[in-house]
Image 1 (tube, helix red, strand yellow):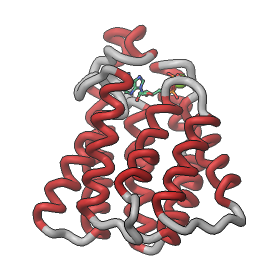
Image 2: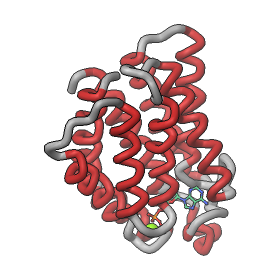
Image 3: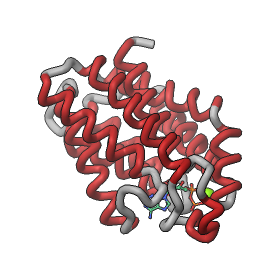
Length: 209
Ligand code: ADP
Ligand code: MG
């Protein structure tokens, strides 16, 4: 993936959050305060504004601008947590002109570690991590098998989607969802669904969609 494909990723993500806005808001109104879809869409719209008309010399610069925008523009819990993914992208891609399967594996794995350190959640607590950890593991196994990036990201997108679906049966013990107790069971976590949308956007940008 090069800078142009990464720019396409941010554009696609904005489109996918636009089309999934109502579903994300619905899920967050069951589990939390209903703002998740709006917050994520605002983040990606602000990234579009931030990158418009600028030229980025490297992937790292672009990831860094996106991460800082997300951090600045989205309040609540999810701003710093989702910004982490792009800020880790900036670190992993330093000095690289293109990103390969192993770079994305490293980016998602270090994002999981940072997000766990920030939010003190672990796998199985019905959060974004329940989609992000399976995606990171899937990319690591694809890197070990030597899969090219298009195949690897498509497979990771499936893993993230399955991970997000599986949060339906989980009980929330972190974030606002924890106040719902047993009632949180039966609804997908919106943050996990957002991770699945992001990995799908990466896969589609790599495929040239
Ligand atoms: P807020 O809870 O501030 O309204 P959002 O609604 O935007 O924030 O985001 C909620 C999402 O954030 C949840 O669906 C969950 O995936 C994620 N989340 C909440 N708390 C944590 C945490 N401690 N660790 C990881 N992810 C979390
Ligand atoms: Mg919320």
